[in-house]
Image 1: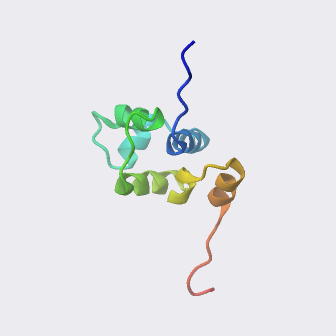
Image 2: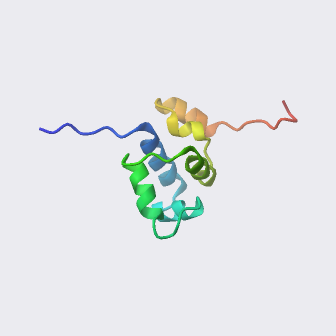
Length: 94
C-alpha cells in the first residue's frame, strides 16, 4: 500500500485561510497579482505542495486573506489560530 504524502504546512494553511475567507483559488491568485490565465493553477499547486510560493507571493496572499505570513508556517494548529487572531497594536500605542 502506498504511503499518503503529507502536505507541507504552508499548503495546508493556505487552503484553510482561503476556504475560511470564502474565495476561489482563481480569485485569490488574481487578487494577489497573478496573471488571470495561471492564477487558479498556481494557487492549486501551492495548496497541493507541488510548488512553494516565494516570500513576495506569500506576502501578497497573506494580505488578501488578512493573515500574517507567519500563519502559513505554524505547524501547531493552536499556534496557527493564535497567529491568525493576533491584532498588533500600532507603533504609537506601544
